[in-house]
Length: 326
Image 1 (tube, rainbow, N blue to C red):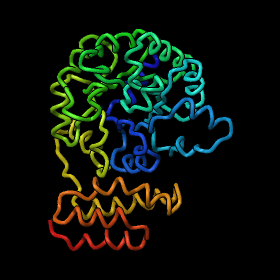
Image 2: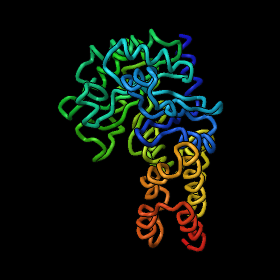
Image 3: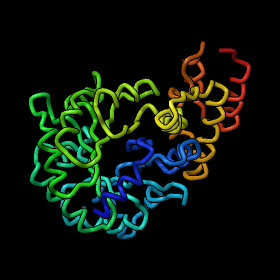
């Protein structure tokens, strides 16, 4: 019961950041926290196998990095070996307010290793993993999964019930199957079927790109809250604006192009501080399309930025956006 009470405190904003590999790093989490003071942050997926190597002296500890104001924050782990998952949760307890288990990642290299969404085909092992993680931490334990592995294997309701029975305190469910990957539309209404069958909080995930889609998702899913993934890339204010709307009914406007360019510069500078200039400039290329969209010649500018290695030239290109009228 104590862990369940903790969960309610952690999710009181009704909004969380969905974990995204190679995206929701320390910098992104810090940027989102700047505009979203109380949403639940989540780290990138941390492999329990990788974590074991890291603890044996290998590099990679920047993935654990957090600031005091990052709480509430969940650290997400993946794996299929109960004892290794227990050790991962033991180690991450010093950082996390919640330990989240990834049972929804659809990527081939993850499911081929029996991690991620592959666990939806092995509910018994998934149950053992939840119990093992709970044994390793006194923090709440959550599980993220999908509607099923394929359309013919939509076992999300039975699976969610088993996760609750195993001791999970919180569920986030993406409204697609593994076979869909990120294609098609998230089926928010199906999530309501799970919500009827479990007593623990359920957050809905998939296709939440603005305040209107968040509100529609909650209406159809009857979920307790929403997890925002790709919609937050290029707009660190989105989670905070959704949370504000759910509390007040007021729709704050999306940042204009000039403000987004300033956010992008801040993002770049912080990644340089974390990773070094050369690595950070290449790392940031995937973010340009998200920050810089919705104006004439956007594609031309993004093409220039993606090919540019010089920091000062990148900053000048972004500063020149101030002259664009949209």
